[in-house]
Image 1 (cartoon, rainbow, N blue to C red):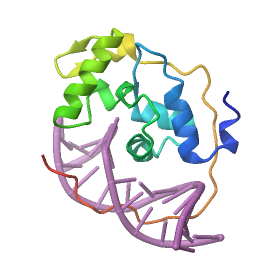
Image 2: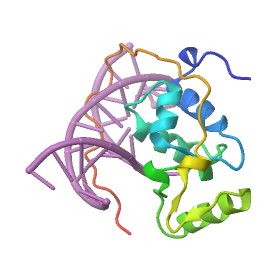
Image 3: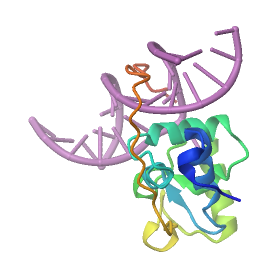
Image 4: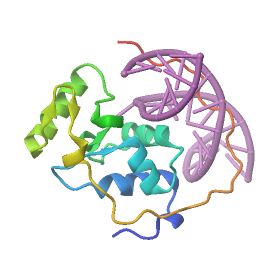
Length: 126
DNA sequence: CGAGTGACCCTCA
DNA sequence: TTGAGGGCCACTC
């Protein structure tokens, strides 16, 4: 059961949003982040996906339905999604048909001033 | 050249 | 010490 996401931690809110995606459907970082109430934290979504493996990470795609993963993980994701009935168009998914739409998006206004400088780290190459 | 995105990081309590 | 939370920047199109 999902409570008001405004009372849940950010990671939990994001995780809850991810769990709201039904089988056979996919979502994007921006959509998840916005659904969770943190439209600017698309990166945090990735962090949750990596940290919490209780989520259907396979249903989370990058913008445009692209797979943000790399290597065999991308192939695995595609395989799992195809098993759910999601059709791939080359390297992408047709979000127009498979993107899950959240019934309600809670507008949360975070007025906290915590972390400032974030990751400057370069992206991993493969 | 500009806009958009990201499977992370760092900083604060 | 750990937990929680938020954002900047490099890279792609």
